[in-house]
Image (cartoon, rainbow, N blue to C red):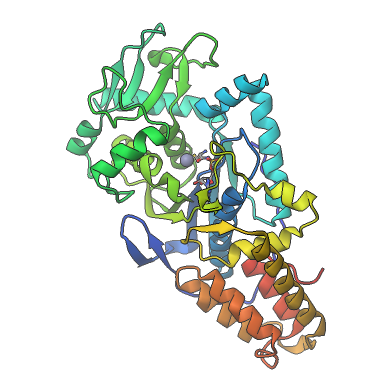
Length: 423
Ligand code: 5CA
Ligand code: ZN
């Protein structure tokens, strides 16, 4: 699938740095290593039935920070992102609005692309829709069925059976354990499962938490050839498991998404992968905080969305939106306020002003500037963007004047934080 145009990223003088990041299964901050100069990332993409809200934007801007940091460390970054372009919520919205589901998905994906471009988010190396990956999903579900880790559940309203993942069988035969990725205890998982697309009460399941792998063709629903599985469409978690494993090394470095994906999504994507390949899906699982409005999580179902496109249409500078997002640590939950956006705009203005007044010194361009050292050390410790922005405030107050020229400052702020202070 087509992604979006890449923003220009200035190259910086090489400065090797370490990285520590908070990984959910570890429950703490852990060192991230990238042997052979390669780093690999999968971030769960949108379900395109509504446009980009600030929560989505936050997730992708925060992972953009990771991509930019890795690149500044001289690493090659292989980044994959999916689009869940076939799933229940998309079909329900299409039905409710009398739209063709494909048109809905395409129009909302297009809006997402333009929002990402406006926010100067570096596009993934591979951008892939679930629909494009259906043959791979079929292959993996067939494999899981052969291994005895997937089983059939008869579906009254379909000609063939649905396929479910057998948690107990997977625990028996692999190193994966329920809860080992998302870090939840069983009671919490039982509460979250039905809230996040699960069907605990479906008759015929071996464990109420067993997730759907393949849904048999229903009347009026889109369907694809499933070979021995029969016609149907993919479950949600297997989609990301397959897309990631077909495009990234196993295990890849970081699996990312919002904290709402800790369970069931990342728990089961990882379980499916381990069951199919006997290899963990990823080394680290990184979950961004939830952005809310008036104390509630911003979500399509609650209809309390602040859309990036609305903010920009109302005249807000996308760079101020980006600065607002980065002023919150990626791991914290927070709520949007117009006052904070206005404050971010003022702060951005100060940085631009400082750049316009910064001295030029062409002689030192080949060496890392003082500002580059400081920003990269802030990011090395759990990608601390708020600390990086505080450093920019200090720079604007003249603290790095001797060790950093205007050109160096502009390049380093652009390359690491994705903010172009020159315009
Ligand atoms: N398509 C699936 C992932 S495979 C999905 O969750 N789509 S989504 O459109 O609902 O969300 C897209 C991304 O934004 C996910 O990584 C999700 O965790 C994140 N996200 C959703 N709502 C918020 C929010 N309120 N705050 C922060 N991140 C959010
Ligand atoms: Zn996903």
